[in-house]
Image (cartoon, rainbow, N blue to C red; front, side):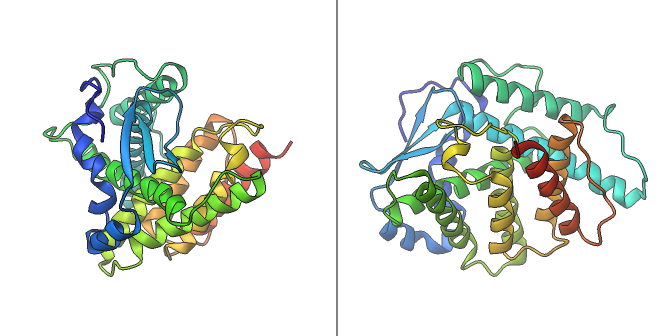
Amino acid sequence: MTEDLSLRSPVLIFASQIAGSAFAVAPEREEELLAAAPTFSLALSNDRGFYIRVNMSTHEATLPIATLEYLWACAYLFWVLYQEYVAAQERGDELLDLSDRRYVRGAIDAFNWTRNNQAVSGVESWPQTLPRPTRMDGDSAVSAANELFLMAIAWIIHHEIAHVRADHSALHRTYAVKQELEADEMATDWILGKCDDPGLRKKRQLGMVTALLAMQLLDEPPGADTYVSTHPPTVERLYACLERARVDDDGAPRAFAAIALQLQLSQYELSIPLDGSSIQDILGGAMIEFHTSLRTP
């Protein structure tokens, strides 16, 4: 990873962990990774916009700092929302109003700031008043977000490594979409394929879901030069990866995804029924509502 950028963002306290995340996420496959992608490298940039791209000639992946900030804020927001829903469920609440929850408001504010920063300039200073990545915070939500963030980065990096391993190249959109789905499958298989520990599998699945939900919440419109134009709809990628990862219909990663999608749908004044027979029913309803209401002309 390049060292020419100053520590201008709190997310860069994890620079070394980001650089090694592809190995750390599945340490049982370290030797395989060294053999599969021996020349793969990472570089930081001050670019704006959300992307992590790999140069197919040099095998170097570029990670904008603003993208990393956005991913951390997503991890924090998703975890805070998930914990609030779990607590409400345990209490047996029939109605959950999060408008007066300080942690929720702070999480949403951090998410909105990082989303705006990566879209506009990419180099603004993280506001001191907002939740941020720290190592010694004492806040369990920050600690959980740190872990989810690194898991999400690892899955995305393995997605990019998959393009190198599969020798993908820039082609017509139809083939590009197929290649993205193949890279999703390869990344998911890599981090989960040799993991038999239920707790570790759940963490890795949550990281994968965090990465895909972060892309989903950007909601970029279709167009010749947009992210969506060369990538399949993220809701479809999310569903395919949950199936590929063999997540139970009522598993926490599906609940995690359903809660985040409800947040997104609420921004468009859309809603879904919450009385499905399983979390997958609720998640499926959210996916269908998003796809038919926001993607269909």
